[in-house]
Length: 342
Ligand code: NAD
Ligand code: TYD
Image 1 (cartoon, rainbow, N blue to C red):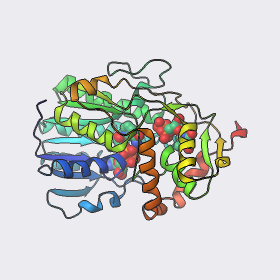
Image 2 (cartoon, rainbow, N blue to C red; image 1 turned 135 degrees about the vertical axis):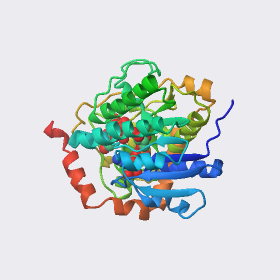
Image 3 (cartoon, protein in one colour; image 1 turned 90 degrees about the vertical axis):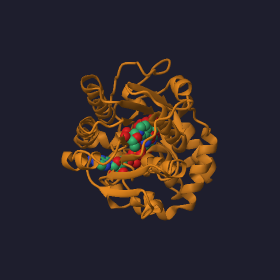
Image 4 (tube, rainbow, N blue to C red; image 1 turned 120 degrees about the vertical axis):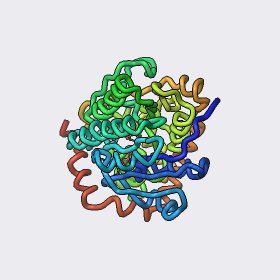
């Protein structure tokens, strides 16, 4: 497959979980690409995730907001492509504070699309999510399926995507979209199910299961997802979207069971809490297009990925301990309610 050769990239939101793995992957595999990271450093952005790259040649970090048109325009003028990871990303937080999601995930994405258009970029790669398809009762979502987002998070991601697609249609923006499934692995802020359950288990705390724990997700190891984004960036066709997942289904109960087993927590500590409002029961991706057109597929199975992830959190308490601070527990208290209150 022919690859495009990119020389200078602006990677937005790379102080977070997936973006930091992506930038580290690029540095290892394509050291000739100059990288500028733009990140606002919200609660989810952590300079420690990129510390090993500081002061290395061909890399720089800029603190700023993707919704800041002037700053984005300035940086976009210095590169030939943008990859956007920057977003508010947690469904539960989107239920409490939806407009932060609209500003970053819709407006911010629009600002980036506008800058990519203005500067005639080679590619604008938007990292999107399987959640734009909404709850999937049967079958698997294909890239051509309609959007049916059901949470303020997924609605904002869908809104940003639609705005970017409108630039592709109206202005010929060379847009490539990836729709990834649920990521897990090292350096994930302890609010999504996998790192929350692991850090709770290591602290001897209850693992809070929403509802009956039977809702399923397609859990993909973060490095597999990043290889898929790299494949889409270098081999994807402008105007195309690619689902990036494993094609497997794992319930919340199965995530809890894996964490109990791998951390040695007492299984009695798995507890039910009040269900998430509007909880999507199932996401499931058809991942054939990425395999056929990008030559990509996920390689790390759930068991292997969970072993690696639990080991990482055990060995890197100094990374996650400071994140479980006052603001974190304020959110925790607001979000988690006893099941009997339902
Ligand atoms: P994350 O929450 O760990 O990190 C988000 C990063 O974006 C942080 O560094 C934050 O500081 C930065 N950011 C937020 N608002 C910003 C703004 N206005 N300007 C600049 N930077 C800003 O997120 P993640 O889990 O790494 O997800 C990255 C991307 O991948 C998101 O677009 C998300 O929608 C998408 N995605 C995530 C998953 C998943 O399971 N985590 C799955 C599919 C797609
Ligand atoms: P989450 O990690 O928030 O990702 P998503 O954006 O896909 O909802 O949740 C994954 C699944 O785990 C989802 O079915 C909700 C469930 N869940 C719990 O049962 N307890 C929790 O504390 C969290 C955060 C999620």
